[in-house]
Length: 115
Length: 115
Length: 115
Image 1 (cartoon, rainbow over the protein chains, first blue to last red):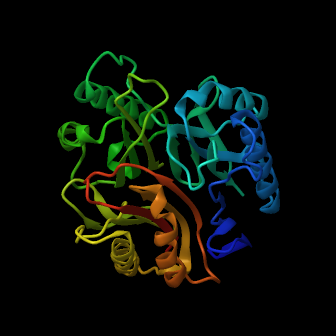
Image 2: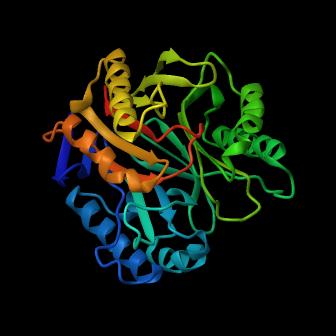
Image 3: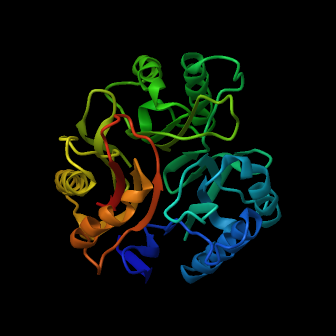
């Protein structure tokens, strides 16, 4: 069972595949001047992009861990999640608050999916 | 390797199985008026329940991530964990503090297990 | 697909292997009197040690979740990470802030790897 490292960043891999599972790094929005709604949209678009690079897509999601800079953004993040997610193919999920690597990040999402 | 989504919630799956691994969502107690001891008991009972739905059980646990609303509840949570866990079949584990989706949640636990 | 529990601690397993994947518990430094630089070094050395116990090594890393007691230690932690990691074989990664089980822990790292 070899590891396919599909796209490397400078210090970690952005997406890799192993044994039928695709792993994505924790994703954040590129433009962090926006609020949580747009940052969640951008983050989920990035997840779509990297899942596609690995030959997967959001209908094959297995897990999602969501970190919010401020847990009071929970409902706002969920409005975007609810539009994005395929209700017949949802992953397991956990959402907690955490300070993120950059002060302007409002949300970070790390997922796995079936290959 | 198909994904078996065993029970869906409104916006994420509660338990799914893929390629020999069972994934549970982050679980919390239903009655959050209780303290961390009872909330941990209720959370672990819920984990037993959903593992069984996937044909697994706590002797097949692979991983556990535990989020505590207040890390000073670490010892209290562990008294319940220590009673519950099968010492011949323990998962790897990490426990950190995090504010959770509801202010009254004291503990959230996300596990994986062998199918 | 049996689970090989390779080394147990008192209340969770330190390293186990299942279906081609090695899972390590969240690792911390033993000597917590040191700052984040030395604690990161010690933690990564411990990860090397436990990966080897499972017949794996850092060139087979799949995922890494890093919790920092203070996210302002991000750059310091990364200087050690950057020396340690094999750039041709990097895992996906997420780094967030969290209070850890002991007040003197500066960093905790939980990884998975291919067996």
